Image (cartoon, rainbow, N blue to C red; front, side, top):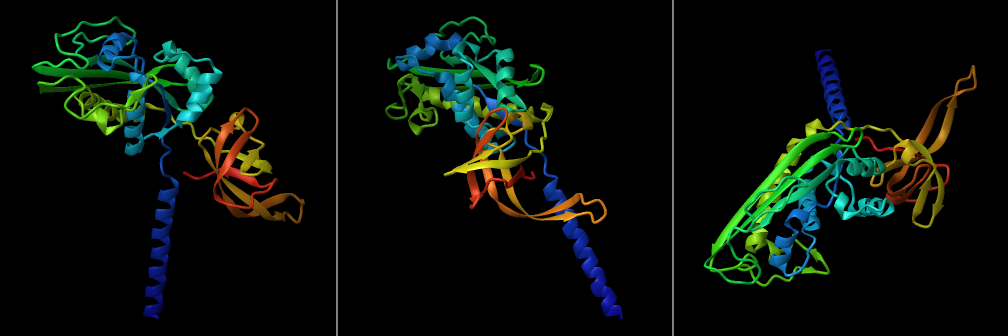
Length: 331
């Protein structure tokens, strides 16, 4: 009898523990979803062009570095670059709008993110006068640029960013990063092998060629510091939890088209569970459906969204059919 009671107690305890862990897993916090704009670099354009020998979009290079850092950190869910570029092209968004809070909030709403990050490069190279967002230029500190050798070269990179609420356009948090590096008897692009990582106005700031240079070292230090400060601002972002419930309207090759879109809360990059109703249970008194028994078909990911529909691609599973139900994957 005692043995039976002991086994029953163990079973109950196991059930309680399992229930606690299942509840904890289901209640995992929703990550703030943000988009990161290319950084504005107009105030340092002259200096960067002198260093590289041409007008390189250093704002995009720094944005790419920051996104990589944020993805590795995992605090935020970052919108895919192609989704951002698509909206920017549709809205005829110009480079001059990069640091504008109002424009950023509008783009953020279209993307369905919780906040959008805009920033400016305030120092780049030997610039010694720090500028504010949208402020004036600076002056050279007497150090070398480009490929001209000097007894000592010093590089300073300063960047500033703001997290903008897409609902109100309010600045939720401000973050800054600064990096410095110096070496003797070399130039800002020297001391790390030949620099080949740019062309057509773009630069690969993540390449070892660039990061081994003096300017590359200071850029990486500044971005890493900025990342820490951006992550610290996450608690200030109000996340939007939306439950999506819709149907598969059509299946065309590898594309799965839904009858719900942006108005229902679907965003590009969202993953949705696809289930198939196997049986409907009806109330014997009223005849109303009181429960639907389902089986999981798979998981799909939204790749293109408009107000009334969404195009998705399979993540797992197969055999998707028109009429299958789709719902938000539990976080």
